[in-house]
Length: 128
Image (tube, rainbow, N blue to C red; front, side, top):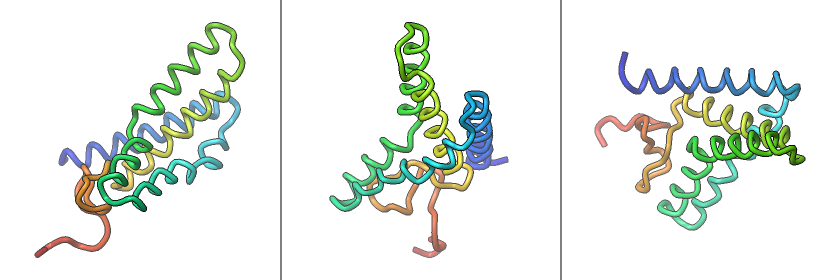
């Protein structure tokens, strides 16, 4: 298997684990309800491809959901309110990233929205 195939499989596994985590938190529907919210980061493309890629990648890397999950664990550990909600948002966010990666939508390069770390998306780039 190619490295891109492995990354897509990892994305699918991440999506399944995130959905299972949300289900364990009795909020299986959160990843579905919030799915498109994370694509709002693509609005950065209004300011150009460089700013767009930075904004999109900030919303589609695993850094955000990891930090949110850490915050959720810390909140629960210290008895602060909101730990469950933070955990559900982290699961929904990770689910979104996982589904995107499984479908071949990776982190963006600054030259084009269609150029991702997983290759080109959209119409064929052969001969260009």
